[in-house]
Amino acid sequence: MNQHTHRKSAIRVCSLNVNHSNTATHAAMHFLTTCQDPPFNVILIQEPWWHEINSTYSMVSLARWQLMLPKPSIPQHQQPRMATYHKLGMGISLTLRTDIAQDLDFMILDIGRENATWPHISLINIYNQKTQNPHMEMIHEWMADCLQNQIPNHLTPTIIGGNWNMRDPSWDDGVLAPTPNTR
Image 1 (cartoon, rainbow, N blue to C red):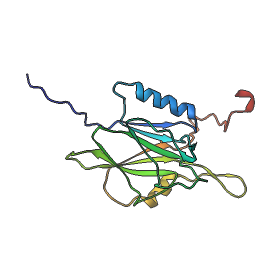
Image 2: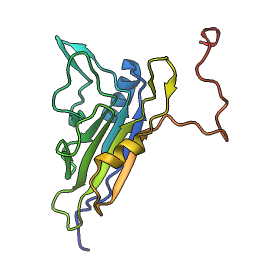
Image 3: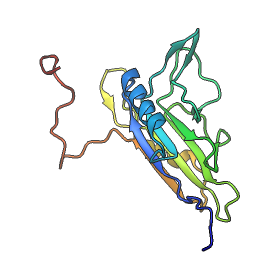
Image 4: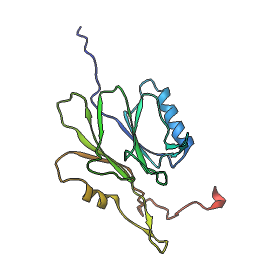
């Protein structure tokens, strides 16, 4: 019987909004570190926990996982609205495309398998933040419109994941936020 090493060619991606919660972030990290074979190789995080650790603002680090932020340098008064982790030693090539964009609301990554014969794809992690105008009204700015101006017109297959902060009347109850009495 021939013995062949089985190498998984699929790149498994998870998208998770941790809502700035240290507890949710650590629960996800604990799950990953206790799994013999984690169910995914890449984690797209939205609304990451971002706090001062030893006089530097940062996120949670995770052994054997590489953290990628949307910009190489983030000023102290700002914070990323998303980030990406990828598992080391899995034969994945992941490159942050700072030559295309450096934005705290989205990040563009080239991802593929090392030494693969097929081309890399683009993986975009977004957080669609609704902004307020000077009259304190919510403005609906859609990340798809912003991305259309940022992404070069090419034939590279692209996957967009993240938190769109969209509501649809078919499932939305119309409640904007919980009342203090329900917390």
